Length: 417
Image 1 (cartoon, rainbow, N blue to C red):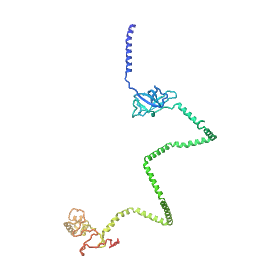
Image 2: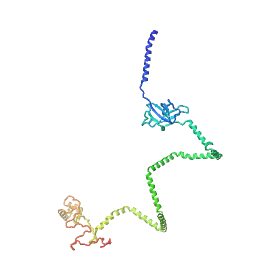
Image 3: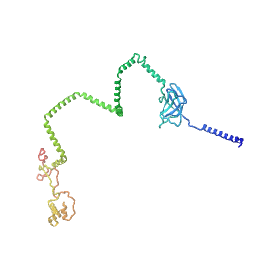
Image 4: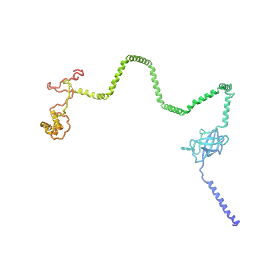
């Protein structure tokens, strides 16, 4: 290829390269970017902070200071930071000096962990900012301290010198004693250090107790008031209380003398009481049965008394609602073969069955009848129904119920007849 041809070929390539570079620059320049967020913080002083100083979160640079403007007694520091970084709404701004001579930066703390975030253009007041103490302030405080202790201050009359001289005189020659004292103090404090968890636990429990008392203030006040009322009442009845205690002491003296004089008799009585108690314990079930049955027994005794005749009436119902002949025939049916049962028993069974009177199963068996229902104790024809105690009974001889009743169980209750 000839030199002229090479030159003609390179010119279009150079032009294309320049054109592409210009397009790329234009894209970079005109590319839309998210604007950074603005933040204003007010400090009491801002020594070492200037436009361009870093703004950091957890030590990582997220922005920079754009302006530092004095405003009366405070300094207004304007900052901007990346929009991707979230800052808590209650964040603080601190001026941090990495070293004595290096530039300082503004630290936003704490790091965002959720919740409301700081809005764009927000301001942090002086109450939530802090600036480090300057070396001049430290020197000034030390100088004021030295002046306070110097000839123009506490040592104006030589008091500080006398204190140092007295301390020197007291400590001179007592180095060993002082060392032993400090060693003993350290050993005494060692158990407290070992039991600090228990000590702190006790303090925490005491704090909970005082908190509970504070929450129950009304109840505690009411209790104290009632206690004061009781104490006041006891104070008002001091003479009566004194007399009662005096009488109690006399009574206790009499009881003591009585016990001393009757020691053997009391011992025997206590032993007998122990025996009785043992018997009651062993017969506990019997006592319970007696207490259950005794009221019913007394009630039945009162109901069985006949005031007309002055006697205790009973109803012997050994054979039940059946007559004696039926009872005897029933025994024969159970003990003898059917052929040997007397005919009179069959006749009795037929008579009872025809009249609809109660029959035993044995008599029904004689008549080849099925077993019947249990007897209900019906009153046989011609018999009088039972009467309740205390109800007047007509006397045929006297013609009426005018009968005097004995309500004293024949004189047992010793009442009027």
